Image (cartoon, rainbow, N blue to C red; front, side):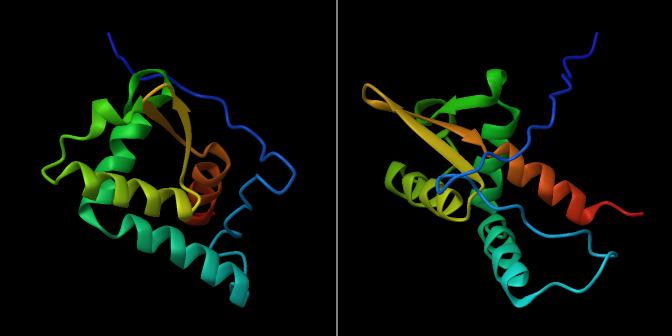
Amino acid sequence: MSNIKVLPLLEPESGPESVAPCCPPLTERPFTAEEAERTARMFKALGDPVRLRLFSLVASHEGGEACVCDISDVGVSQPTVSHHLKKLKEAGLLTSERRGTWVYYRVEPSVLASMGRLLASP
């Protein structure tokens, strides 16, 4: 029995809080300067092994979200975990919600879908 679950792709929300889509597929056309900046921020955030591990922990966590208390054991101190999670949020890869004393993180679905389209081959 497989524990893989297919999640629906969500359309990006509109408004100032929403995350802009990344960019078109690499094979479609060259990036504009703005698209290149936005994409570089995302990949730069994922270029650190600790951040990539945290991103993976959140993305693969049951229910699609993870409490910081469940993902902080990545070999660095808690303040360093918080710093890396902040960088992932600033890059638009994660969203968060405070519940009492804990913060819960989710992967931003519109950005994940956009990154998948970016790397998809024709």
